[in-house]
Each structure stands twice: as C-alpha cells, then as structure tokens.
Image 1 (tube, rainbow, N blue to C red):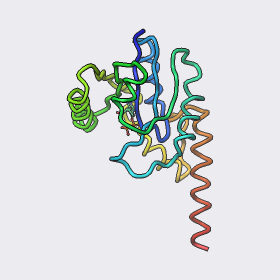
Image 2 (image 1 turned 90 degrees about the vertical axis):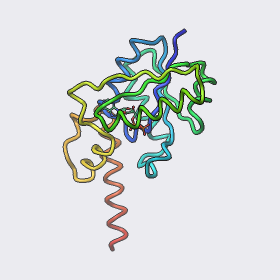
Image 3 (image 1 turned 120 degrees about the vertical axis):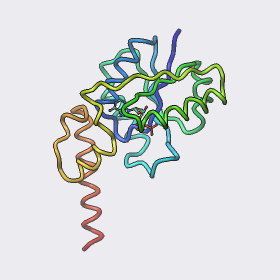
Length: 170
Ligand code: ADP
C-alpha cells in the first residue's frame, strides 16, 4: 500500500490545503493528514483538537484520507504509520526556500523518506491560514478561502477573541 503523510499546522485548514489533499489522495492509496506543531510559528490560534475536527469535516468527501494529530518528529511518525512519502504544497518562492531546507533535512535524517511537492492551484495561490485569521478578525468574506464547515469555526473563534479583548478593555 502506498501511504503518504501530509503534515502541517492547518491553523485553520483552507481551500488551498483541500486542493492539495484532493490531488494527493489520487496519487496514493492512503493519505494521512497530520496536524503538527510548527516550532517556527507563534502559538497556534486553534487547539490541536479544533484543527483535527475542522480537517475531518472538511475532508469527509475524500474516501482515502485519515486525519490525526501528532507531537514529535515527523520521520518517526512516518515510520510508525509505514508511510515513506511526505506531501507538501508549494505556493511561491518564499515557500520553496523553506520547503527545500526541510526536505533536505528530512533526507539527512531518514534516507527512506521522499518528500513530494504539489504545486498550488493558481486559484488558491494567495490563500494562507494567517490571511484567513486576519480577515476573520475584521469580519471579512471568507467563503472563497475556506470550506463552508470551517468558516463557521473561524467566525466563532474571531468573535470569542473580540469578546475577550473587550473584557480586557473594560
Ligand atoms: P506548516 O506550518 O507546516 O507550513 P501550513 O498549514 O502553513 O503548515 O501548510 C501546510 C502545507 O500546505 C505547506 O506545504 C504549505 O506550503 C501548503 N500550503 C499552504 N497554503 C497553500 C495553498 N494556498 N496552496 C497550496 N499549498 C498550500
């Protein structure tokens, strides 16, 4: 069985991510989407459980996908799951530099793991989780950026953040 891991912060999952999942799921027998903590990023806006729940809802239409959370080393997760492929999406040059370093580091750690890149769909190339969070804070339109089931969670989260901020001001 050809099994691949698609790791990421998914804070929250966007239409850009979903497009990568749909295309990757056609290339492998099973695609394991795994929420990882990225130490290079600030504390996540959504908890691990919330991100896993949003991913499960948003990928319910893809039959060979499994969603899980993991805290630890990606290569160990791949070994544990018997998945020798890592799938990552690529948007612009800025993604390339970062992804290139990560893929080389992974190869150094474990020769048996291959990182596979899928180029973004032009329609989604401008979408990022941080952009979604920012737009939600100011009540912007999210329907082009995230699946409908995710929009609800993001709006609730932004509203709660707003309320917490108001309490601090009062
Ligand atoms: P990480 O913190 O691991 O970079 P992200 O959730 O930001 O996690 O991204 C996960 C993967 O999805 C990365 O490979 C990223 O480049 C890719 N990705 C993010 N947004 C898009 C998009 N709009 N189109 C294609 N790939 C994307």
